[in-house]
Length: 265
Image (cartoon, rainbow, N blue to C red; front, side, top):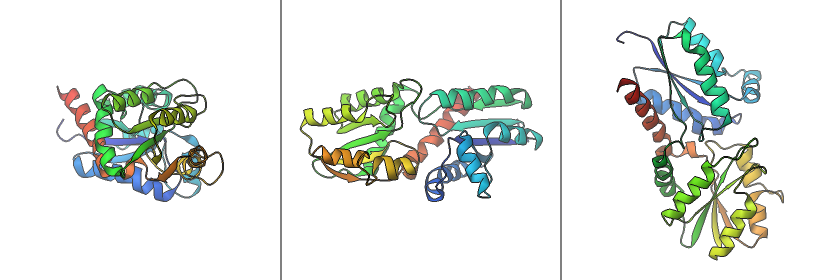
């Protein structure tokens, strides 16, 4: 495949907040460009809402089908799509897998990497790199706020909780979507059963933004911070998305390496 033009597409749901986008998505894409110099690293977004907002601000933002069509027109023969998505849920299936399959005939080869929580080993790997970054203080336990799925139950969060429990880690996982579990009430019940008093509340989300500043740590009564404090817990917050942690960003490098190894194997 010597001489072929190769593109590595880092595709994410997207973030409209400029600072959060730079600290997580752009930083992850920059690391991939550094680690895979033979590939042209480019970004695409699966959220039409986010993409349209960015375009209205004069920011170049392609959907995955748009970017794949452009890469084909620009003479790229080989494409590797690495999703930033944490879970292999509906967004991954409908926006990443489907777009890759449709664009397949345009290229000599289209490879699709896997989401962050895919294999059993991924769960321990994420916990291993994230916990040292968050630096729990003495007596604190960690509450991680994930998004959850509004369409169907996403078992990834329960699996992550089980792995944390199996390793006796002071970690409690909950999700924001009211239709999914474990919800905040379940998290509070776990904490009370354990006798926990002090918490570090942090996002299990790739990037910051309104889910972090408003839903997790906002001053309104329905934020997780206010509800946990009202339930009697002392709460400290860390507003950094997962993508702001260098050790977490490095996991995307591993995902790309795994995809290439499988393709060349």
